[in-house]
Length: 127
Image 1 (cartoon, rainbow, N blue to C red):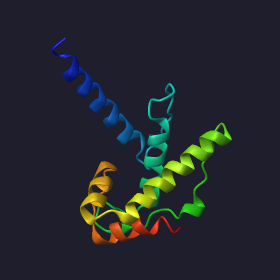
Image 2 (spheres, rainbow, N blue to C red; image 1 turned 90 degrees about the horizontal axis):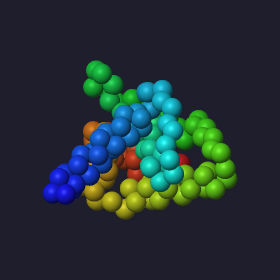
Image 3 (tube, helix red, strand yellow; image 1 turned 135 degrees about the horizontal axis):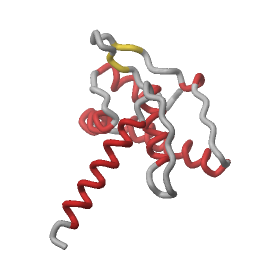
Image 4 (cartoon, rainbow, N blue to C red; image 1 turned 120 degrees about the horizontal axis):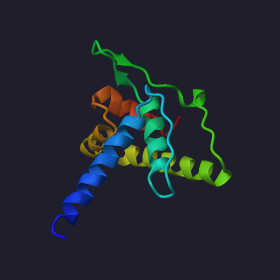
């Protein structure tokens, strides 16, 4: 029983790593999982990573995809509404975050924070 918290943390870390891989907008992925496993979070993270500017291999900032060019399909209106709510909530949080808080949120998405990326992240709420 002593190893249960360690195993639990290892399982969570492994699941988070898999979600980060699947949320990469450059990867083609198929996600199948049970209810409550984080599929909606993964999709919201993927949308955010797609919309945010990112550095290319040469260190040049590439623009993110404009939100109007992204189409998301869900199986139900409830799922669509939940995704929209979570996305708007996260973008709304980013507007009010300090630079340090926003940097932590961007790093969780595997995005290297820069002043330009912070500005773009905060502007997404209005777009």
